[in-house]
Image 1 (cartoon, rainbow, N blue to C red):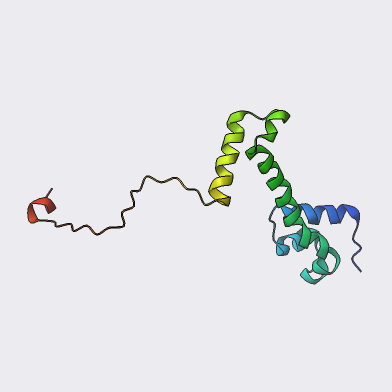
Image 2 (image 1 turned 180 degrees about the vertical axis):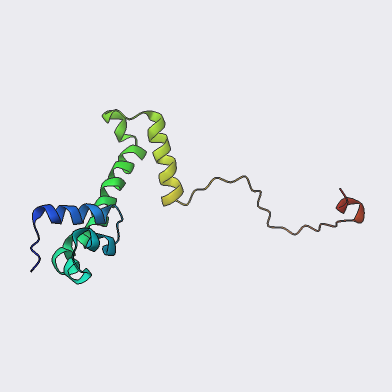
Length: 115
Protein backbone atom coordinates (compact mmCIF):
# COMPACT_ATOMS: atom_id res chain seq x y z
CA UNK A 1 0.00 0.00 0.00
CA UNK A 2 1.42 3.40 -1.02
CA UNK A 3 2.14 5.91 1.71
CA UNK A 4 -0.01 9.04 1.64
CA UNK A 5 1.38 11.99 3.59
CA UNK A 6 -1.11 14.23 5.35
CA UNK A 7 -0.73 17.66 6.94
CA UNK A 8 -0.90 15.97 10.34
CA UNK A 9 1.92 13.57 9.45
CA UNK A 10 3.98 16.44 8.04
CA UNK A 11 3.53 18.34 11.30
CA UNK A 12 4.56 15.27 13.31
CA UNK A 13 7.70 14.76 11.22
CA UNK A 14 8.57 18.44 11.52
CA UNK A 15 8.09 18.42 15.29
CA UNK A 16 10.00 15.18 15.86
CA UNK A 17 12.87 16.30 13.65
CA UNK A 18 13.04 19.71 15.31
CA UNK A 19 13.27 18.08 18.73
CA UNK A 20 16.29 16.06 17.59
CA UNK A 21 14.64 12.69 16.98
CA UNK A 22 16.72 10.91 14.34
CA UNK A 23 15.34 9.73 11.01
CA UNK A 24 15.47 6.04 11.93
CA UNK A 25 13.24 6.69 14.93
CA UNK A 26 10.87 8.89 12.91
CA UNK A 27 10.59 6.16 10.26
CA UNK A 28 9.77 3.61 12.94
CA UNK A 29 7.23 5.96 14.54
CA UNK A 30 5.45 6.39 11.20
CA UNK A 31 5.92 2.73 10.24
CA UNK A 32 7.56 3.67 6.95
CA UNK A 33 10.95 2.94 5.41
CA UNK A 34 13.80 5.44 5.59
CA UNK A 35 13.48 5.95 1.82
CA UNK A 36 9.75 6.72 2.12
CA UNK A 37 10.43 9.17 4.93
CA UNK A 38 13.04 11.03 2.88
CA UNK A 39 10.90 10.91 -0.28
CA UNK A 40 7.74 12.43 1.21
CA UNK A 41 9.09 14.51 4.09
CA UNK A 42 12.37 15.95 2.79
CA UNK A 43 11.32 19.56 3.40
CA UNK A 44 10.24 18.88 6.97
CA UNK A 45 13.45 17.02 7.73
CA UNK A 46 15.62 19.72 6.17
CA UNK A 47 13.95 22.80 7.63
CA UNK A 48 12.85 21.70 11.11
CA UNK A 49 16.14 22.08 12.97
CA UNK A 50 16.96 25.44 11.40
CA UNK A 51 13.51 26.92 12.00
CA UNK A 52 13.40 25.82 15.65
CA UNK A 53 16.96 27.04 16.26
CA UNK A 54 15.99 30.39 14.73
CA UNK A 55 12.98 30.65 17.07
CA UNK A 56 15.10 29.95 20.14
CA UNK A 57 17.87 32.25 18.94
CA UNK A 58 15.34 35.04 18.47
CA UNK A 59 14.01 34.54 21.99
CA UNK A 60 17.53 34.43 23.41
CA UNK A 61 18.55 37.56 21.53
CA UNK A 62 15.47 39.48 22.75
CA UNK A 63 16.30 38.37 26.28
CA UNK A 64 20.03 39.07 26.04
CA UNK A 65 19.42 42.53 24.59
CA UNK A 66 16.92 43.40 27.34
CA UNK A 67 13.99 43.71 24.93
CA UNK A 68 12.17 40.92 26.78
CA UNK A 69 11.87 43.09 29.88
CA UNK A 70 8.99 44.89 28.14
CA UNK A 71 7.38 41.44 27.67
CA UNK A 72 7.61 40.65 31.39
CA UNK A 73 11.03 39.01 31.70
CA UNK A 74 13.07 39.91 34.76
CA UNK A 75 16.36 41.76 34.64
CA UNK A 76 17.97 38.65 36.12
CA UNK A 77 16.63 36.45 33.32
CA UNK A 78 17.93 38.89 30.70
CA UNK A 79 21.31 39.03 32.42
CA UNK A 80 21.55 35.22 32.36
CA UNK A 81 20.67 35.21 28.66
CA UNK A 82 23.27 37.90 27.97
CA UNK A 83 25.94 35.93 29.82
CA UNK A 84 25.06 32.76 27.91
CA UNK A 85 25.15 34.68 24.63
CA UNK A 86 28.59 36.12 25.37
CA UNK A 87 29.98 32.74 26.42
CA UNK A 88 28.73 30.96 23.31
CA UNK A 89 28.91 33.71 20.69
CA UNK A 90 31.83 35.85 21.90
CA UNK A 91 33.89 33.05 23.51
CA UNK A 92 33.78 34.63 26.95
CA UNK A 93 34.56 32.14 29.68
CA UNK A 94 34.65 31.85 33.41
CA UNK A 95 37.86 30.61 34.89
CA UNK A 96 39.62 30.30 38.20
CA UNK A 97 42.86 29.40 36.48
CA UNK A 98 45.81 31.74 36.54
CA UNK A 99 47.52 31.71 33.18
CA UNK A 100 51.24 32.39 33.23
CA UNK A 101 53.19 32.66 30.03
CA UNK A 102 56.67 33.04 31.54
CA UNK A 103 58.96 30.26 32.66
CA UNK A 104 58.93 29.05 36.28
CA UNK A 105 61.29 26.51 37.69
CA UNK A 106 59.85 24.27 40.39
CA UNK A 107 62.08 22.05 42.46
CA UNK A 108 60.61 19.34 44.68
CA UNK A 109 62.83 18.09 47.45
CA UNK A 110 62.56 14.84 49.37
CA UNK A 111 61.22 16.74 52.41
CA UNK A 112 58.45 18.36 50.32
CA UNK A 113 57.44 15.05 48.74
CA UNK A 114 56.78 13.46 52.15
CA UNK A 115 54.20 16.11 53.06
